[in-house]
Every structure is written in C-alpha cells, then in structure tokens.
Amino acid sequence: DSMNEDDSSSRRQKIPHPKKLLHFLASKVPAIKQSPDVNLRIHSARSDIDSGLAACIISTIAHVCEMYDKENSRNPAKSDSGTRPPSVAPTLIEDRRFEQLVECVLSGVNVKKRNREAMQREQVPGDGEEDIEELLDEEELA
Image (tube, rainbow, N blue to C red; front, side, top):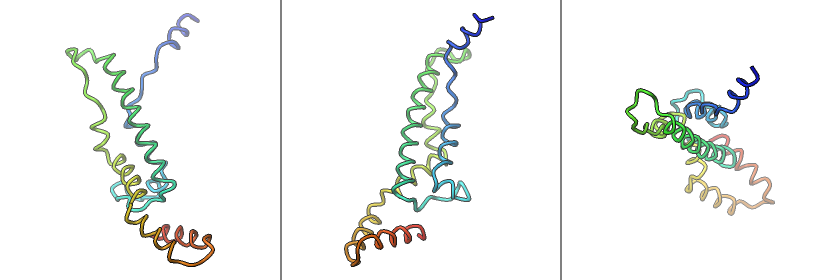
C-alpha cells in the first residue's frame, strides 16, 4: 500500500488549463474586479498598481502556457496521429479577460495622459504633497 502512495506522489501532477488560471488571476486586478461587466473596456487604471499587476499576470500566463504546451507535447492524446498538439496561447489572447489585462497595462502606460499629468504638476505651485493627492483624486474620478 505504501508503495502505491510513493508511486502516485512521484508522478507529475497534470497542469491545469491556463485559461482557468487566467480567469482566476485577472479577477484579482482591482480595475477588473471593480468592472461590473466583463465586456466593458478598462479605460483607466491606477498605473502604479493595476498595470504592473496586469503585466505580471500576462507574463505568468505566458510561462504557464509554455509549460502546458510542453507537457501536452510529451503526452499527446492517444487519438492523435503523433502530431504535436496546437499551442493554447492563441485561444487565450482572444479571451476577454486577457484583453482586459492588456487594457490595464495600456492605461497604465498612456503616454499622453502621463505627460499631461507631469505638466500639471510643474505648473501648479505648492509644496508637492497636495499636488500628488489632487492628481490621485482626479485619477480616481476619471
């Protein structure tokens, strides 16, 4: 009996489909979590939080896709004629949750918006702390 347990624990666990991970992780990004409908575009995200988190999730999903594809190419389905199974990545980049992650990244690196904010900071006199708080408040309202 203990021999069977050792055998099963030494076997590799099957990697779950990356789409499950995508949907789980994307829902953790604050801008996506606050969106009432998955079909709504993410137009503004807090650049310091959402875009960085979204970029990390995208890179994690890419790595998981590579692992999943590698595992599937080692263990092709018995019905296959020995051909390499297609990658899961193309189906994921068409997924709406992936698109929302990309929208978060893009809203965080919106160059025109960031340049406009920088110019406003330079033009507004003050001690600096109030300016940053005002900009954060404006960003939350936008």
